Length: 174
Image (cartoon, rainbow, N blue to C red; front, side, top):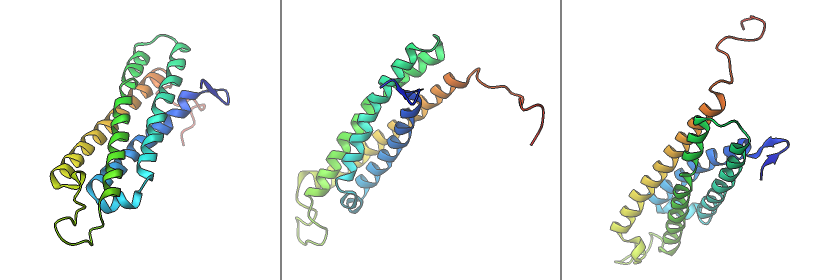
């Protein structure tokens, strides 16, 4: 995908990634922290993470096309380099979202009594849940920080010489 309605696809698709990565990260953390939240989200959590994962290479490919169609610039190169690093974070979000969804699905409801009330599954034991929660927090934070860094570098590349410090509307102040 290169152009959408005559505009470079990257400048439109980037909004998909900028919204979906933090949304997926937030949903993942909520589901990892709370089994109830994980059960309520159900299959939506891994599907959201899958759409996010698919959106990253689509946006990156559109960005690579755009990079070949703008003047060579160190800021653009830096943005492209940073953009290439988002896919592993998106993959981590997807894998963890699938695991959290699966473990919540496999666990018995909390109303059961006895030693198996947590579901009795390896994935529902306390140390594994704590590890999954910590890993989810780390991957979610890493993904969001990476999206911020990529977006900041992209904004700098696009706008570093693209505006004037003074108004150009004939000097009229509003």
